[in-house]
Image 1: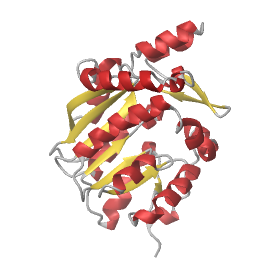
Image 2: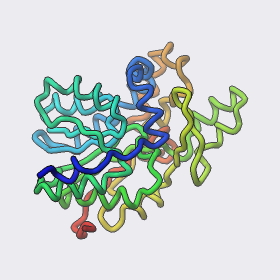
Image 3: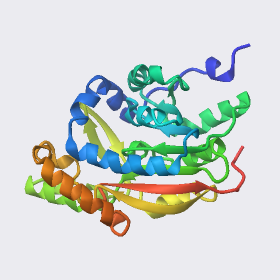
Amino acid sequence: MQPASALREPAPLSPAIQAFDAVAARFDTRFGAWRSVAAQRREVRALLDRAFPRGARVLEIGGGTGEDARWLAARGREVLLTDGAPSMVRIAREKLRSQHGPEPRVVSAERLDEFAAERAAEGAPPFDGAFSNFAALNCVDAMDTFGAGLARLLRPGAPALLVVFGTVCPGEMVMQLVRGDGRSAMRRLARGPVRARLGGRDFTVRYHTAAELRRALSPWFRLRRRVGIGVFVPPSAAEPWISEHPALVRVLETIDRVAAHALAPLGDHVLYWFERTTADAPQ
């Protein structure tokens, strides 16, 4: 008899996943060379390294082409990458083939509760931690459903590091105002769906506040800390100009390491470090 996951028809891709799926082949080329992205990624990775000890079994949500999963796997963590975009997952599989870990899976963050139910039916053990980098969760509307699914996947005490867009990013505001785009400068202040565009495709994002995240993930997770990612290192709106000034990026990255906690709400991204509580997960 086939497992339930094999019998169910695949869900249609959301507009956001369709957009990222369409740009998967050129995603690393476009964003990988940007110094602002590299600086922010280094800060996130330092925290991932601290959160997950060697040997930990870690779930990545919205892992894209596998850059962070490959980095963690090379440092002794067992990472299961999930992403809703099939083309992203195909690229990630090639990158991670030499790591001999679990094969990346096509699982969207919106359907994490279904993935949790499948693993429970298979008797799979809980993960030692989870993370999501670079705003994959800003494409998720129902964060309470996501939180319930994540709770079923993690053991009590497990860290969950979730990196989402900040809701007030002075760097982006300045860059967009200089360009005369006042609407884009203020978009993160909106509470509700905000139009976005990638690869010629339209979709919506939501800028989740700290209060919204805490409420959505309660009572299964408690917030341990939050860290600004890209408080002084500018957002991608400053590209490609900022990449032409590597010395400046290095200085701003150094300042960020000092200011990241005190000025966390002002980051281009904000890393929320949650911890799984002992509250029973929904069945």
